[in-house]
Amino acid sequence: MNVLRLILCLGFLTTFAGCTTSSLPGRPIVDMKGVNSAAYQTDLAECHEYAKEVEAGKQVAIGAVAGAAVGGLMGASVGNGEAARRSAGAGATYGGARSGVRALHESNKVVRNCLRNRGYKVLN
Image 1 (cartoon, rainbow, N blue to C red):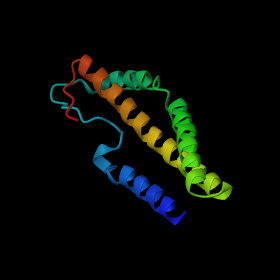
Image 2 (image 1 turned 90 degrees about the vertical axis):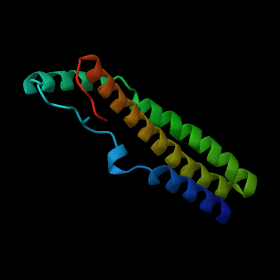
Image 3 (image 1 turned 180 degrees about the horizontal axis):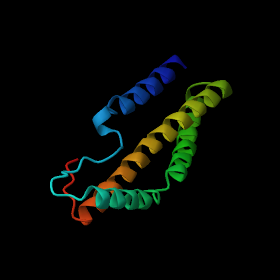
């Protein structure tokens, strides 16, 4: 059971070790030279509306269910019902968090692509 915890912890840390400030979703960096600031703010708001179509909640739920299933199976294979239950909980947390990060990155990508398609020079 301790080996399983170690594996899950290492997987969790590995996933989130790459989450630096520069890789987290947020406002894209745009070259504002010659850009009308008011028009940009309007376009940015509209692009964020498109990004809301990324079904983050659904992706998190699916990731949590898949993580719980995998974790439960791993726990059941190496231990008893208690190990399976704990592993399922850890797997659900891991799967949900990983899917959430993926959905946020996808949402950010939608905003950047939307701005590029509207003629902005997106730097990140």
